[in-house]
Length: 126
Image (cartoon, rainbow, N blue to C red; front, side, top):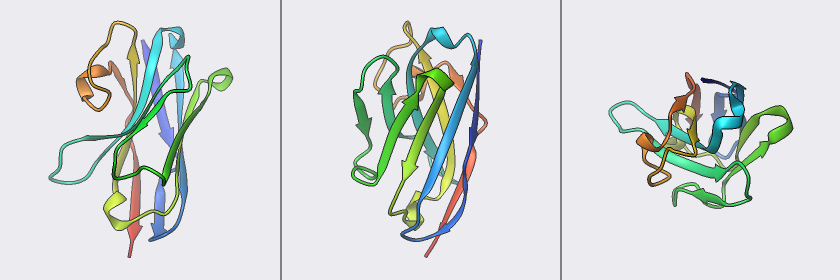
């Protein structure tokens, strides 16, 4: 089992920045891929950013390209999401997700991940 704990959410004005962190514990050697998702009221959970643990490959949703950066510190079992140029439409609960090698599927599909954190709220005001 893997436990994921997010932090770093908060309230900012449009144009501001936040950095989210996700610390993994437990059987972290089983983690093969990680991603950030977000969900706002009345909307489905959507993939924001993705990366594999062992390669530098990253993928982003079109809505955040050029503004968000996903990164990791394997020694600290931590994944980050640097968010710049925040917009009101970025408001939502942000979740960290981790998938095992045997989990497969499109990176933005929630079913491609076994482990989920509880989420951290991001609110962007205009």
